[in-house]
Length: 88
Image (cartoon, rainbow, N blue to C red; front, side, top):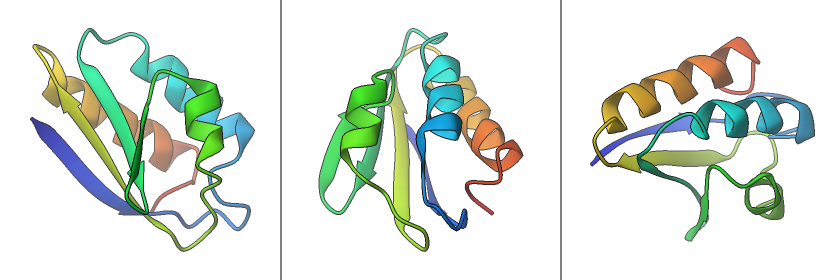
């Protein structure tokens, strides 16, 4: 299993536009990918799941992946969230 922790720095938190981009990126991988926040985990490939967490700014999140392409999945999602300026 591969994972990384990040701090959400977007003033609005993890909102719909960057969440959609991240979900689309996650959906390209075969691995099971999870987004965790405050003890809750959701499928990173589900926009409804991601949005249900209501992640505000200055929140610690964890992205984890398990499967054959887990490392590439985690790296890609981290890059996408940085490009969208959601995490630092």
